[in-house]
Length: 502
Ligand code: B12
Image (tube, rainbow, N blue to C red; front, side, top):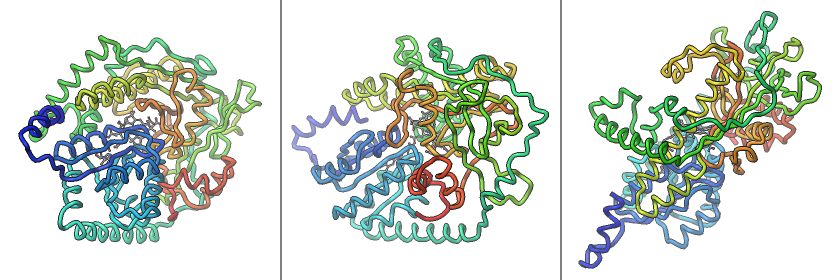
């Protein structure tokens, strides 16, 4: 549609047609964040509905967003973010808008954003309208409301709704009686380390895998998030037969397969991967990563967070450190880490598509590169389990792999079991990832290029995924001390999981 509009515009103009736009929206992905599929979809949808869209791209500092809004005389600013550090940046954008006397509304969107966060943390920073938009299909409706006659009524109603959310949250928090961190630690996972014989990995230190091909990865692709990237809800393959979106899903899938074939045939993407294994033991809620089997010199220390929820049954309060043998057991346990990417060259190829007004192909390529990145992480984990660490046989179907019915986990910093993105710095230093596979961390600990995944490997049969959820002040203070940082700095990075208001 965007192509068609671009094609028709000169003719409409030459016929004296109405060129007035319905309004101007400045869009940007927050500073330190690299993802833009969602923002780009929103941009296309708005442009096709006669809005003038000024897209500033990714990693855009607040000052640049505000300057562009002023220069362009924008009616609305929209900011997008995929990872939690971007939430803080959005609060900063709102505060800067207030400080610089802006009066236009601010739209908040992206996978990591929520109505709750917008209501609790962002709205209070800016009084001229902050609206969370959960998906692209609502963007036009919201923008139309905001630029229409009844905009003040709409903003008042949104504000009232956010106030209700804040009140409900405060009441919910007041009711919860979390465990003090020492009690939570006393209820750590009960693992019988006496009867556990850790399997040693086949090598220690790091290894770059240069032999992974796109064909290897194709079978590891989980297609459900591919449809989500296009705003189609449902799981694959069921979505293909859905009464409402089945036809669109089938067409989209066919287009995706066509581009996938081209990506493989013409080598558009190159999978890169580095992984490592090291002797390791838990020390409290930390994991000491040792230089060698003598376990005397520490290469690094990983810091994990513990659940403080008060369970009504005998479930433990997990921390990832529980899945590594404590140093006092004397067990010779190990930990692994990895970083994979299929993102090199994607930005350039997408820019070329966009220059041709072919946003569809640009978004398609990004979505497929992301699928390959996740598939690469899955493929590597498979090889780790069955060969490189080799603690488990190879008997799983692809369906079982996607359902995670195997031993061991690969939690990624940012996921609910390890919400602190700054731990990626330790992983990247251990792996020397920037130098060996060319993936860099931004100031918000996003990985650049975007189609990248990094994390840790735990092999113990009882290791599992969980959500840390709320971190209380006592754990925050303890965590900051363990990391050797100030409570303020730790609080900044843990803001999305902190129990108290900041
Ligand atoms: C697919 C996916 C990926 C893909 C790519 C992500 C992408 N292209 O967006 C890959 C595999 C590369 C990936 C990697 C990572 N991911 Co990821 N990922 C997801 C997943 C499963 C879906 C995201 C997605 O594709 N959404 C589809 C797009 C279209 O939706 P969207 O961005 O939300 O945009 C829509 C709306 O939000 C809205 N919108 C978006 N922007 C804007 C802007 C405006 C102005 C408006 C009005 C609206 C709007 O409209 C869009 C269209 O409807 C989510 C989980 C989830 N359920 O959301 C996790 C998730 C986003 N990932 C997460 C994390 C942590 C990561 C990693 C850091 C993990 C790691 N350590 O490796 C990396 C980071 C990558 C990097 N480069 O730094 C977390 C982020 C939260 C957090 N704690 O930070 C999530 C939420 C998972 C979770 N539950 O913890 N991820």
